[in-house]
Image (cartoon, rainbow, N blue to C red; front, side, top):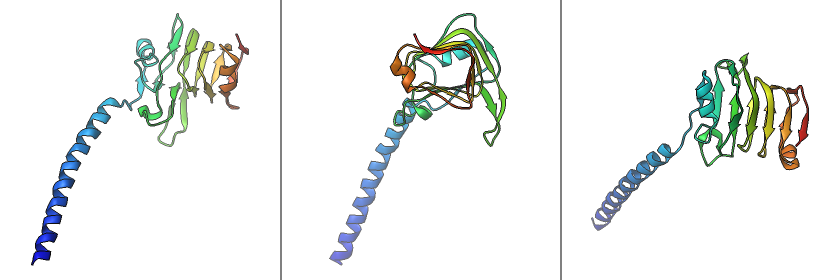
Length: 177
């Protein structure tokens, strides 16, 4: 009888501890979720795009159409893949549309006199940038995209850390300035 009573006490105590720990974990998970931005900015207007590439923007910016700017664009801030600070630093400008199987269905053109990349590990993918790109951060990638202009690197370090994929094209010069 003492053995059954002891076992019952252990079970009740275990359930109490699980319930108490489970509540705190849920609250902590809710707090962490509130601090994490995982959504992309899907933009169709110039001002939306400008906000999305700002320091207060998002880790991925996807355009829905061509965008035209008369002034320089600046990509700023440090962001993480999926918007989760546990992941690698990563930023993506997606100038294309895709289907459910991730096949590119349309490509868009972003036109500006210049776009300065200050965000580390920024990837421009799938579309066309008309103008010059100035890279002032490590890890710039041009992937399945075209730059109708020049790419200038602020240092050799930035140039060496950059990747211009074979399926990409730069119509102008690529040099350290």
